[in-house]
Image (cartoon, rainbow, N blue to C red; front, top):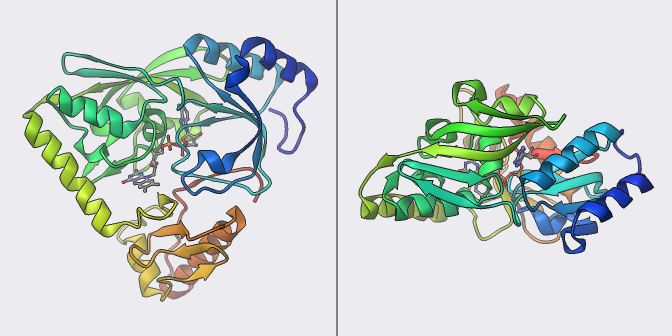
Amino acid sequence: MVKAGEMMNQAVKEFLKENVLPEDLLWKEPMEKHTTFRVGGEAEVLIQIRDEEQLQKLVSYFGKVSQEYFVLGKGSNLLVSDQGYQGAVLDMSRHFSQVRVEGNRIYAQAGASLPQVAVTAANHGLSGLEFAAGIPGTVGGAVVMNAGAYDGEMKQVVRCVTVLSHEGEVMELDNATMEFGYRTSIIKNRPFLVQEVMFELCPGDKDEIMKKGAEFNRRRKDKQPLEYPSAGSTFKRPEGYFAGKLIMDAGLRGYRIGGAQVSEKHCGFIINVGNATASDIQDLMDEVSEKVKEQFGVRLEPEVVRLGQF
Ligand SMILES: Cc1cc2nc3c(=O)[nH]c(=O)nc-3n(C[C@H](O)[C@H](O)[C@H](O)COP(=O)(O)OP(=O)(O)OC[C@H]3O[C@@H](n4cnc5c(N)ncnc54)[C@H](O)[C@@H]3O)c2cc1C
C-alpha cells in the first residue's frame, strides 16, 4: 500500500484510462456527493465498477503496484476527511447492482441497494429482510457492518458471501466463516471485498411482509432525523446502555459545533444542519465521547467509518 498522502503515479493513471470507460472514471471527485453526511473532500479518482472481471483486474493490479484504494458502497456509514483521499475509490453502488431470485434465495451483487433487495424479497413473498427496508446502504456495506435494526441483522439472512482478496483470489465464505458480530464481520479485520451475497429467506405472506417493512419505516420516520444528512447512529451501542440516552443524559441534546449537531429528535444521530465540515463532525464526536466518558465512565465507540486524515 502507498502511504496516505502519497500521490497516485502516472503509470496507475494510464492503466486506469486503458481499463475503465471514461464515463466511469471521475478524477478529483468531491466525496460529499457520495456520502449521506454530504461532507468530504476530493478523492484522487472515483471508479464506477462495472462488473466482476473489471473489479478483479483492478484489485490485482492495485495489489501489484501497491496502490491504495477504498471500497465504497452508498457512503451511508462514512465520514470522509475535508482533505479528501489520495487513493482510488472503487464505487460499487452505481453499476454493480444486479439482483436475481431463485426460489427462496436472492443473489445480489455488492452494490445493490439493501432497501431495494428488501422490496424484491417482499414482492416474491420472501420474509426475513423486513428489518432492512430503511437501511440506506448497499448489500456489500451491510454485510461488512452486519447492519441490523428491529431485532433483525444480516447474520440471520446471509447464507454465503463471495469475496475477493486483495491478491485477486475469489472465495466463498459461509455464514459461520463471516464471523458476524454486533456491527462487525470478518471483513472489518480482513482485507476482503464483497462481490456477491446470497440471502436465504423464508416464504411468507406478501402483504404481511410489506406491512412489516412499512411499519419499521414509519417508526424510523417518527424517531429519526431523516430530514437531515447523517450516517445513522454515530456510535455503537455500548454494552448495557444506549448511546443516544447517554448523550441526552450528558446534556448534549442539540449541542452544536459549526454545522454539525447532536440531533434533538434522536441524540444518537449527529446531523449536518447546513454546511458542516468533516472536522465539525469529528470534533463533535470527540467532544460527545469525552463528556459521556467523564460523566458516566462509558466509552463510546464510533460506528461510522472514517476515510482520510483526521
Ligand atoms: C438515515 C440512516 C439510517 C441508518 N440506519 C441504520 C440501521 O438501522 N442499522 C444499521 O446497521 N445501519 C444503519 N445505518 C448505517 C448504514 O446505512 C449501514 O451501516 C450500511 O450497511 C452501510 O452501507 P454502505 O453501502 O453505505 O457502506 P459505506 O458507508 O459505503 O461503507 C461502510 C464500510 O463498508 C465497506 N464496504 C462497503 N461496501 C463494501 C464491499 N462491497 N466490500 C468490502 N467493503 C465494503 C467500506 O469500505 C466501509 O468500510 C443508517 C444510516 C443512515 C444514513
